[in-house]
Image 1 (cartoon, rainbow, N blue to C red):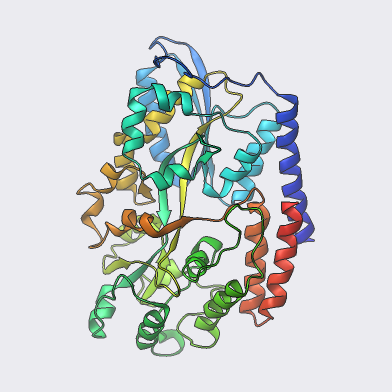
Image 2: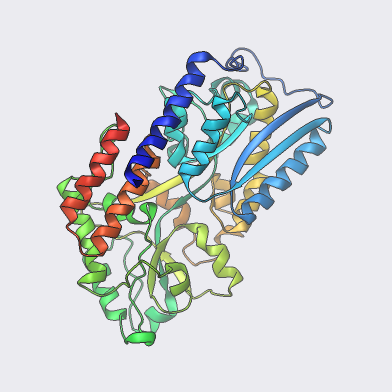
Length: 433
């Protein structure tokens, strides 16, 4: 039943967007500022723009502050700042698809890597090329962002979204536990074998007193670095073919399973939260993005530092970015662009740095004294982009993600790896078609 539902949801989502594109919906906006110098809208313009945002309460506070600041600049512009507490990408993307199909797409769309391909495939976003070419402020912004972040939001040479934040997966380790065990900080080029040796040394006790060497981040994004560091991925590079049955993929999943079932260095992931075990001293290492640092700070936990992900065949990790697009059907593309610039300017970037929910997209904010204050190797958050690859998110990501995690649940409970991944692969291939 779940398999059929997920495939059906993906099919309906794509069909709805295709219908919108074919019928045109409201008059599609031309590429704004395509020729000649860009001129911002007059300060006294009267209009309404709608914005679709997502995240947690900390994110909402940042978005609300930007809306208030925008109101000061354009007092006669109403900003309908629609915020969705993020649960799953399936829910968020389907909400956008429903709005678009009804001709009610928001002017400004906030979306992350996981949902971008669906929007690009179905022409939900307007090209930003005219703004980027002709607005002087745009050049300074682009030059301040790692090209790899921008590349993830391009198609056929055109840019469709501007990134505001991102997360890469890194290894967090408890500095106090390492010191007490006489374990020095590993090399930045450490290997899977190095990792396992350390995890075994730090696993001790039993029952309620059990301390594990590692707490597994049990979600697609958290498992992906193991895949990338072994030269494999859920999808082909062009995102057109599922690779869940690739031998290297299966080898990697066996390694992850064995951390729990064979080596005993990690607890069963079901029912255990790595981001509670780690700060509580019940796990010496875990994997996460920058998104856990705000919670650690609130809890008063500071005995940690970060490391690159260990490698098998290659040094690699995964990144996902949040970005803003202008709807292709927006009637106010220039105002939408002005709002996006404010969402990504240095004042807002500083708020992202302070919030601890993600890494700001600009090099200036990510290299600020405040952002680099903690942990000791905080510079690794931005530096890790140099060996990171984007999360493999095809248009059918809302099928890929749950299909893969269903297979993982089966595998962690003792079922056959090849058989479980074959079923998941079939689900994804059906959705891709």
